[in-house]
Image (cartoon, rainbow, N blue to C red):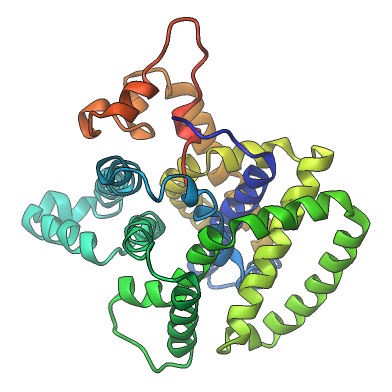
Amino acid sequence: MYEARVEWVDYAKGLCIIMVVMMHCTLDYGANVGQEGWLHEAVQFARPFRMPDFFLLAGLFLSRSINAPLREYMDRKLLHFAYFYLLWLAIQLSMTEVGLLLSDPVSFAALYSHSLISPINTLWFVHMLAIFYMVTRALRRVPVWLVLLSAATLQTLFRMGMIDTGWSVADRFFDRYIYFFVGYAAAPWIFDLAKRAAKRPLLALTALSAWAVINGLLTTTSLDQEPILSLLLGFAGAAAIVSVGSLMSLYQWGNLIRYAGAHSIVIYLSFFLPMKVLILVFGSYPIITDVGLASLVITAVAVLTPLLFHYWIRDTWLGFLYERPALFRYQSSFDKARRPQPGVAQPDPAKQDY
């Protein structure tokens, strides 16, 4: 069955996906023109918590399905992400490596195959989520404290440079799994934090202000990347985003951000298309001379374009881009429960993401 949406989670996811898109747009455009702008400072500020918070939110509702029958679990948590990864990997590589595809299809196929075990583009998050979900399922009988201790140790050793496999999947696992597992294991406390922020908004804003100052100072000096401190700042930033999401939900601020969060997978899968186009256009024709403003415009277009595109095509044959067709699903009891019922409004499948 579909999970009911929680508003503050959508707000938090919206903030996260915007920060992720902003990072790619700002850094890629800055590298393209050989300059940095004021938006680079915002990207730097979000560095400690941007991805940790995204992974933490991804694990937030896992307790609802962690003990589901293996067939159903694999459909939701493995095949779901595998479908979108394989599809959008083909789309991205076909556009970014069109020359290789036309001149040497065998090499293109080799590049595609290699990307299955070592993601080379923005889709690595989708690839990593499937692994996190399956590992957590395998560890569900292991004491929580032991998994937390092990994951925190791996993250610390990785940040200390004592673990470096050279394989991006393994290294990202060591660096990020702790946040995903905490999202799963500490979900009741995370929801309680959101409730407390909503009940005492003035205190929450005071705490957020103090956090922003500390986070800003540490990122400016690059201390945020040091072992242990990076872990603490990751959790502090995640708590801050949870609190901000709760406050935004309380006062109904920024409904577009909530909508973006509810459709975060739509943005994540396809923001690279408008981003690449605008970086090429702005790099060739200096329509906007200020690097920071240009980066902001590229970010806005890269966020909004996928949402508009999805809205236009969701009821057409192109819907397979964001909704997994029945052909690529296990046919089981939970599939039957998801089939449209006469006279019953159905949720938007694109909203049912991580």
